[in-house]
Length: 152
Image (cartoon, rainbow, N blue to C red; front, side):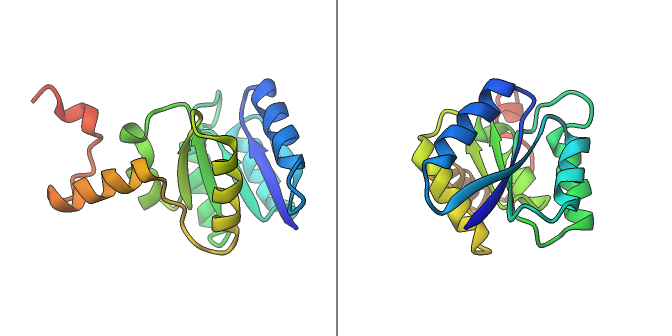
């Protein structure tokens, strides 16, 4: 059984994820938080095997929480689930220690598969993120989001 902590400031998102994940016999939601500070507390409990975390939240953001959690709990997999396109944050967050990055437009089954992947200690790379990483390698590996280069 993989124990999951959901971190998102929108109650409807947490509820939908909890419902969907509960339909999987090997996945169980054991905690929830609505901001980065509470995500750190959730990690401290030791009751989660994977954190599924948004990055845009009031107070301490998911970006700041990622850094704080990875400093204290480097082995805890953190899967980012964000409304921002992969081009904005994915590669930078993977470099900062995220175990994977999913856009909220992804298929629910992809979320379950990504959770299983990161729970096994692997990174989850979606096709969109894989393309960004390949473009980065081919283009010299810039850390800048692609949308920042458009005006150059």
